[in-house]
Structures are given as structure tokens and as C-alpha cells.
Length: 233
Image (tube, rainbow, N blue to C red):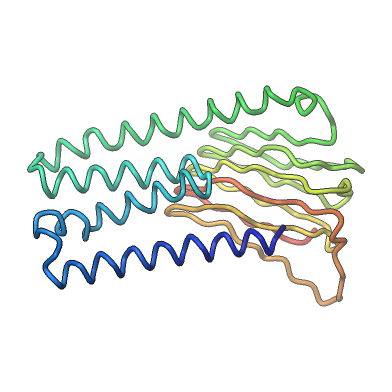
């Protein structure tokens, strides 16, 4: 599965590079009209392409929408002579709407799997303008959701055991932060997308521990104007 995902990423990256090179070549040969090339070869177009790639290929809804909105506004500002100040008066409310909509969508997705709501083997941490320490002792941990907005939590999984199979821990961090501590023998994959923020894997151990590949925790999600990290318990 991992090899297939890597091949898909290389395929799309190759297509993107070929497309960029082709447009560049056609522009140098004066085949593309100047007014079209000015739109295609611009930061607005770059942001828009990245946004559409994140939306439809990587399935990163929040990041894709934000990049697309930024790209569209840059194109409008550069080529349609719309007042820059008016654009940004629209831009920030649009970003707020996107963030709110993403929270609604995540809630609806959770409803599709009702067993996660009350199951002690799932975590559902919601920290807004606050937070705290939370310890999870589940012996069949199956992931869950962590939301941090202007706040954050410290999640302690040192005494927990990961259930067999592949499980997801979904993050949504905005102007906040989250620290997650896991046992040394856990197999953890970090697939968090960040904009003006970051999420780091800081696991280090002086003792050689071989993770159990039959049990995988995938930490994924979206971080903006915030951060977090995963460490050893």
C-alpha cells in the first residue's frame, strides 16, 4: 500500500512538472498569447493549481480550499483591477467560513460511525480557549479526533496499546497546539498538512525498539497558525 501511494505521488508530481515545462516552452516560443501567459505564469495560478491538487488528489479539503481561494484572489487582483483592499476584506471572512465549514464536515463524518462516539478505545478531545492533560489507558486504542482552537491538550498514550490494523488520529489545530506521547514500540505515520504552522515527529530513543508493523497509527489532519508534536512517552 505504501509503495502504491509513493508511486501515485511521483506520477502526479511528474505530470505537474511536465505541465509547467510545457507552458514555459510554449511561452518562450511565443505560441501562447501574452495576456494568457501572464495569467498562467503567476503566483495566483500557482496557488490555484496547488489548491486544486490538494482538493482532488490529496483530499486535503481545508488546505485545498485555502490555497484555491488565495490563488483566485491574486488572479483577480492582478488582472481584473479589483481594489486590493476590497479583496482582502472578502478574503479573511472567506477563510473563516472555510474553517467553520470544515468543522461541520468533520462532525458529519463522525456521525457516519456512531460506535466511535462512546467507545473508550477512541479519543475525542476538543479544546477551545483552553485545554489540559489527558491520559488514555485503552488496551485496544483505535485513534479518534483532536481539535485545538486557541488552546490545546497534552495527550498521554504511554499506558495504552494499539489495536491490530491501521487506525487514524485526525487533528484540527488553529491558533493552538497539541502534544501527543506514544510508546516506543508503536508504528506511527505522520501525515499532517500545515500552513503557517507545523507538526513535528520528535520521537527519539537510545534503545533500539522494533515497532509492530501490524499495528499502525496514522496521525493526519490540518494545522494553521499553530503547531504540535509527537514524542515518546
